[in-house]
Image (cartoon, rainbow, N blue to C red; front, top):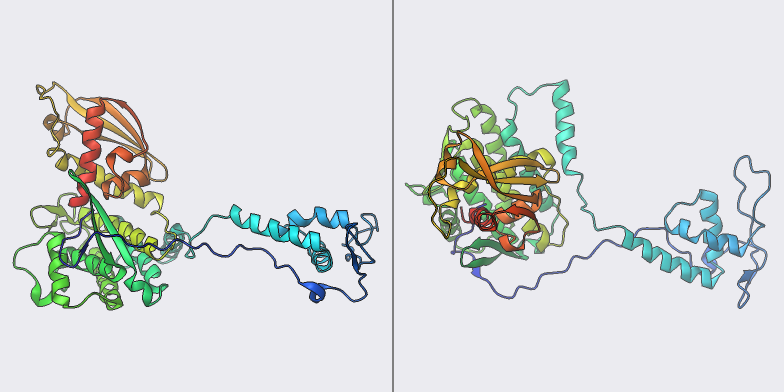
Length: 434
């Protein structure tokens, strides 16, 4: 949820983004000419749509001989749809493919159907289901518990960094210099910077260093580390200046090593003043408890992984439901801190009850949160009154919090005070500057 600084990030310009090229349509190939023609097959007679003597498809087990006559054109043509969907039996597929070698009209129709089948399958990521890793680890830990388990609040960071690492290992050298457009929201309008895939990893390395330094791990800024905590943007500027050259894929190894060290260290630190309000991590001007800081880093890792995936034309799935819910919960709890920058237009007397907005999230991270919209609501105590209600998809809510989706563009259901709804959504988008 942090926005990048200026140094090392070029001003926005027209950046040509490569269009995603989907994988080639699946499906069996069509045999050409005599290569797919069986010995003794008769010649195709143009005009009447029939063929000469054709080999009889092998009879299936238990076949008493009943069925279409050998080489029946209409029967074979009726199987083209099933063949294109790879739904034929082995015997039927052999008969169809043999027929396609001698029947031009059927071969043309088979090609059209095969291309149509490709449109039925959306582009899918090459990596495995994001939940598979968590399921495998859970099963392994059931058999042999870890001596130093990863805390539940660190699991989203562990998972998202592992997913991004897998993506980075699958891209080529040229992809590290692919242009990436980073966006976040400001009250004046959307802000955009452009960098490269390597520049994004350098940014993550520098900002993750906030948590690393707080835990006593090596500081990625090294000799350039400040005496006083810097904001995420300032840390990125300083790190890029220290490099002295544009970032390259060489940033991958130290970033990966740092993510592993952070996960290992949180396992040892769990329980040692790491409660909801313990072990503060300074962000320069404000601080977050260690638990929230690592969730914030998981959130930004996922968002920037999506930026990278878009730059290299690679589909990328959102976090699994339980992890997505933790990220949504973090954003919902931080909104009141930025809401003060968006006061209501008409000053109203302090109400007798806490005024709240009911946020209902749909999708894998579903849940209900109540966000206080006045100073009295910050206490979290006493009766409350819902003055507005918003229903929004979990991923879209995160896109608003990351500054990737303008508050006015969010597709949502809403009831109640519209001015309050817009205030809360703008305060949510303002988190992208944190």
